[in-house]
Image (cartoon, rainbow, N blue to C red; front, side, top):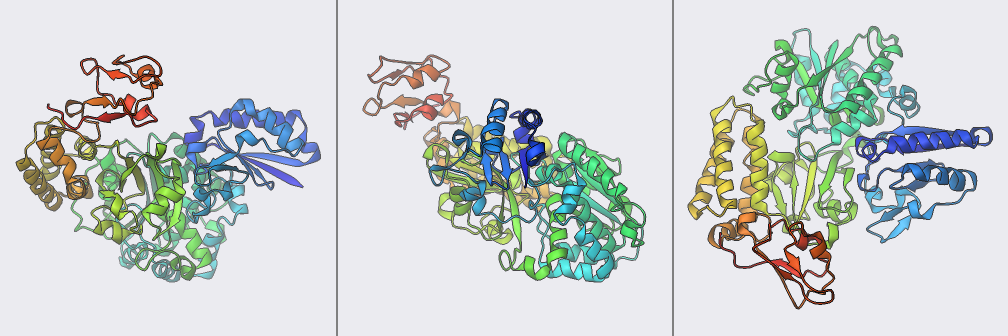
Length: 601
């Protein structure tokens, strides 16, 4: 019998000292000489997904998963579980949906509702070991492509799968490959976009950290199909672990003959270089990314020049994002029919999302296209933190829209989200509750986009700045109803006249909040009040004496000492001292603290 211990060492868990957990477990396994009795190995894996409960430690084949493990728990796990066969109950995952602890992570609604294709290996292999990847079928797809398929057959298989680019645009991957293959100009290039800059997004990062070889294999298959010999992976410089693991994977792939000259003895040559991005959000746009690889300023160009015809250094180029490449090996291995049987009519396969915000189970999830937002937020995500009222989800990063509660039953796919005024984007899902001000959300995203705009075109550079000024005035209580008309007009102008996707989609947060949450805008303008209690100049709090139990928790947590009262009796809030931070409202279990209905700026 053999046993394997998997310790999550994705970026989130590393921040919670999971590497120390790994080292301690390894030390105690050696100390108690477990290898002598039962062959016990330990692996540091990529992100397991359930970041909220990390660091996670999985024990196989016992199918035990421990959550929020600390280094001090290592010896107890080794002695009780590995030696004595006992379960450490206090470390088991608490499933928020079931309201109880479960032994296996597979028993939780968070994992049960997922179907993993792009994330199939993450959490199950050591990303630094190419042998682990090969053991799980790695590079079998490349072998099949090279020795059992023609380049045209590979392209046809990707076309028939219905795979659409997972970077945001949703363009059919097979069609892009076909167009590039038809151009009789060489050299051709294969590029991976790993410049993931959306706030709250970490899908591509997790794949590069946890399963780098799947990206390499996907790119190499494409290179064979379009007759390319050179590839580039563009990775954000902030992604240090992704850079480390991807570099190691490329080195090992060369050593094993999966990259370089005469790959697998098939007479095909292809190699990959890594380019480190400088952190500019606009370089996530395909043409700006290629400019950056060439050593130029990362500025987009007009899209009527297709990159499949004239891309990197003016040559035919196929560019897809990390998640798209991760799907390719499975499509070639299992076939297009298998892949296209998953998802909806127009959106095939699965989609990886980073689920963050005011949700109980934050983390990385992969679900079939067509899964509803309700299932994503309330079943997989476990619902809203503190069981507060759900208000909206923001999908697609800063260029996506905010979707209200009455649209929670929308299926998640490219076309449905677009029809709702949002977009799939790269896959960020931010959950918002009743304490989220939708006007402030729109202002926040425009502030981000204003700073990240390259400034090349006037519509984006000046239009976003002017929209931000209007939103800032509304949040400060200085707005008028005429501003809403001007704001909407500006949105359509920026949308139509901007050069690249950043500017064209920048109005989405504004347009969707105006459409679905106009009452909040009017409250800011007419009543000079922020209903969510977020905008300081338009917020005042009060304590309901009938609901207050006098527990004193709000007073203890008030940074301005604005709350006073005797224990067991209703407390009072001194508005003159209140700094409008909202901590009292957030922490009160009895809903005794509320936003005043009448506030004057």
